[in-house]
Image (tube, rainbow, N blue to C red):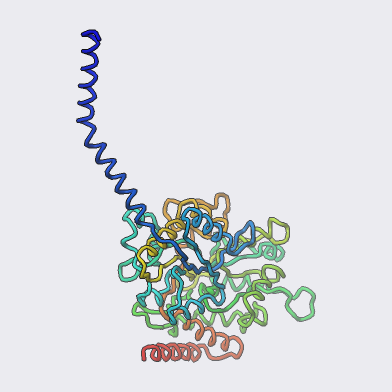
Length: 449
């Protein structure tokens, strides 16, 4: 090798040595970190086995399936995590809460269940606190109202998943046939609401019996159809101490509005307050005999699909009538969320967390338009592009009230029992509300003993 060649070779070696001295430490730090991360990743998810998971249905607008939205995700998660199996149990909208309550009382609950705003479960100390599994950035991704639904005493007890509410659905074709204007921007006073319902209540064939009615609704536990009217004059179900207080003058005023629909204004069918959920919904959706019907957000997708297929009718969405609160109000479990019941196996707990973070992926949040609900993440917006009805609902989510109390399910049962007596037997409203309060307080005393 010539002296010039040796000189070039030496220069190259010196350059490589200097480069190694400069870059070497960073390289080893990087490699060490990668090894550490890979080790953690392998140690993080050692669990193999079955995770039990319960949830309520969400109807897919395209397929009509109630559980396809979750079953497909479960299959994908199981494929990505060999040896892990998600045992899914569907809950009925009507009786699911009773099954979950029984499971809580007998300690036969699942690994993962729907817990948002359910203070009864959260306050019992049955759930895993998940603060340690959520980074500050992850927490910051959620909308404030969504996160509030799973917070208790400053800690987080679940993973928010969807948001929804209740609204009034208007049969536009019935409005047009009677020459009635749709409420401007979806808002109306109670007097305007009543006048509209009267015009929609019609005896078409002149036989003395009404063929069409202005309003109908289902009345039952975990259905919030009537609360937008019941709370419209400022009534509150529970005070800040969690005490049942729905028997004051504001509550009486709200309840009177419901009772008057049947006994004074006669703008509802004769079985109002007694009909099943299926019967009440059928009167509006299939029979097309009802002008205004309150329902959850899911119903908008159902009506849209029926209209597009030629079997439905043109409809619009409105707010509940404005009362003394000066703003419309609705009530619902606005946020759905999943909680993890306490786990003895740390590895299983980590896998439960991984599954719920998997369900919360942005791609799945964007796909919530398939089941007629809204995302809980701040960065996921306008999933209903061009759908003015869902845009309206999303803008008015701010008027929805979460009613949260450990005794909420039992409270509803006692309250609705009295409301039915007011509707059917003309029971005095004040006496009925006082009776409900006494029963609720008696129940709470028994539970404490």
